[in-house]
Length: 108
Image 1 (cartoon, rainbow, N blue to C red):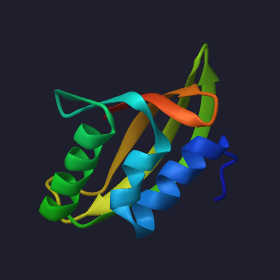
Image 2 (tube, rainbow, N blue to C red; image 1 turned 180 degrees about the vertical axis):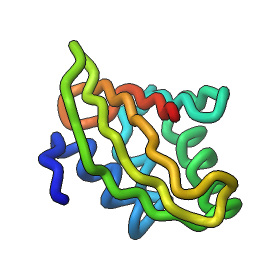
Image 3 (cartoon, helix red, strand yellow; image 1 turned 30 degrees about the vertical axis):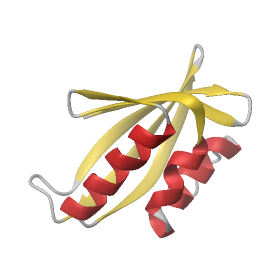
């Protein structure tokens, strides 16, 4: 199933599939990520977050739904990999700043 995503969000999921280090480049310089109870601020911290997650787990993420909730774009994606509870559907709450991601919060 193909989902029509705003370009910065589509770029995030594409980067996560092939070049996880490029994920940080999808964010504004002062962008934030909230995941698993932790907050990462700035592209260097976001790159470190993604590098650690990629080293710890092998996974694929397939977005299958998207909706607008005010200023947020909420994408639901099926995450499958070698982590406890796999597979799982996660919700990605994106706030965009023009052509970059200003914030992302990932929730079950």
